[in-house]
Image (cartoon, rainbow, N blue to C red):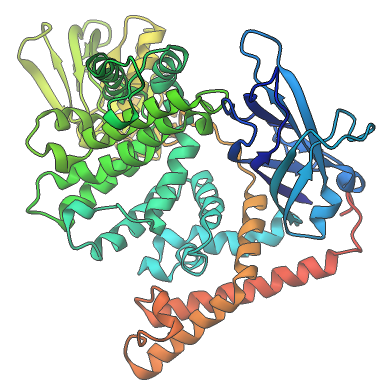
Length: 625
């Protein structure tokens, strides 16, 4: 059994005074860590949410999850400790409260006020510690053996290939769970794990663009496409945010510079001109950190942004700037600006900043949104610098290497020293740095980039670039440079349509491949190519767990699934779209027959899975076959 508790700390009332003054309260939640500090108040508003994932010790490998045996689950408690932030002095304990998971298992959503107790959960009675309001949601999933999920998982993974995409299982789930934001996350995780997310996002983004009439409103709504991309960025972009923003955010949060520029909110003695300079300096630092971070942008984000650019340009061919606004809608408005506004939610800061720093971050975030919006800077060349690196992995590499002339049969004497240069558009080599190129190779023609065995030319640190012509063999100065070149070239060419699946790790010399001894120079490779799509992405995803969550979501929305089936039948019979007053108008049905077919498949799979749950419930012993 896997369970997730969502613990939301809402507010406190009537906290005790410290030395006759209001305290600076913060809370700690067991297993998670600190929550925000609220300055000078005895009635703090927290509105903070935490997630606990609990699993059996042997059922899941993620060590960060809290592990517990089935018989001990009801002994668990959510414990919240409240403290006064002492700044330079020692923090003072204000009180604690505990909520038993046993209560939660009988009450899916639990809301209550709790009187704070002294340490030890009320061993000494007191009524002057104040109270804490909690909202706790409990979800429990029983994960079956992997084979049980094969039909549903297969149906979901086929989603990117279904035409129209609105008839796919993943899109149908998003349609019937439109009001439930958490329904998107397990689908994103599942597709991400199986390298199917980019194609699915491209398809649903194309569908959204069909219904977008104005270029300046592109990807501004809360649609399935934007929610999927939001979740994708949160999963794969966390380390990217840490590298890009954390140093400057630490400086902002730990300094005492005032940045208030609203005359109404200025304090006595504040100098608005000085504040403007402070704000401008911070914005410049944040902005520079973002614009100089292109090489750190995760490849998966680049792949999605590249697709968005192409789709936007195709939808609005007369607007040359839409390809950039399509990307900046996510990079600035939904990613960097959000992280600046709430750094603690992305683990960039240990807790929520105080009110003054929070106001500074709000002003910076709003400015970043403005700077990242094409509409406000449509005539400014700066936007091109900002958005191009974000929308494709723009790499510029220029290094001296040994290059072997192609097609020669002699070994050892046909290597020439050349300068190799790569951008995200072309690979070229030059006799001297900065001079005219001797050869230019479009990056789109690269089919694979792999290291070369020592047996090929008896030279170390060699790699090969396989393209539409004969292979280009290159020797780097050392093993580090060779690895860097392979990584750079692989990343800029990883989405090319003619990528090879296999390659020869050695060369074709004297009428045969040295690796496999095949005589034909056109013989397909004898070794699988190195995958590059998720090369720098470490994922810890349990697909069975995610599929079970999707099953639970489908099951809880079964009535809507039946309504969608009825809507497909009605459209097919009456040969027209549903009437506005019908519930059917809430669904996206482009092809009633294809959608009906998918819905029937989902319904059948749900019944089979429910039967598996019923069969195992109460009879199967944990650890048994």
